[in-house]
Image: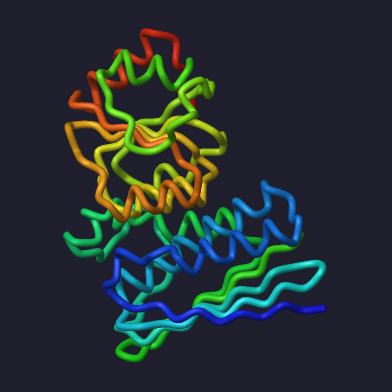
Amino acid sequence: MVVEHTYHVKGGDFTHAGSASSKVKKLLKQLDIDPKKIKNIVIALYEAEVNIVAHAWEGEIWIAISPEKITMVLTDKGPGIPDIEQAMVEGFSTASKEVREMGFGAGMGLSNIRRNTDELKITSEVGTGTKVEMVNYF
Amino acid sequence: MKVKEIIQLTEATLVCGEGRLNDEVEKAFSSDLMSDVLTIDSEDILLITGLANTQSIRTAEMADIHFILLVRNKKATPEMIELAHEIGIVLMETPFSLFKTSGILYESGLKPVY
């Protein structure tokens, strides 16, 4: 059986940033997934959700949970990432002052995502948006 | 260290978590940067931070952290208190700085994460 959910994320809305990740955490707890695995999944998802809020105009999070894995696809409409390799370098950041005031924007998000996922694919088109695909096995 | 000792030592006010005063905390981590907090492997630590917005609560939720101490006299917003209640996080406020708070608690036996 596969459980699927879609969540909408609004760019710039820091008060609600993390609410989708919170819902996914509750869902995974209900499914009795190993707490260590849940922590990896929700940390990656939360960082990716914060990225949409911090950088994009709006986005969508689609998740699918099967007995062996969770697939998370985050698609946003936004400025895109001109150089993904550079963006992956820890410490590189284009975040605004507002984002830093929220406790993020130190250029650690993408490396935190990479550390907490089993599979990660980022594709982006400048001026259109970014797609982040993550898979974690249970 | 018990929650009530943390409150006593840092002259803190408890804003969420009545009935959890005897909960035991072993380790703490001090940071205003949430991405740093999200790299910590230990669970159930005390997060000492000056970040007084909902993201500190969300970060704690994702990282399985159940105790937060706000420093520099920062006040928890109503949204933070509501979220802390919902998730089950003990939330405190101290007038002391991050450095002073960390120093007092370290000296009194609270362990660092690394």
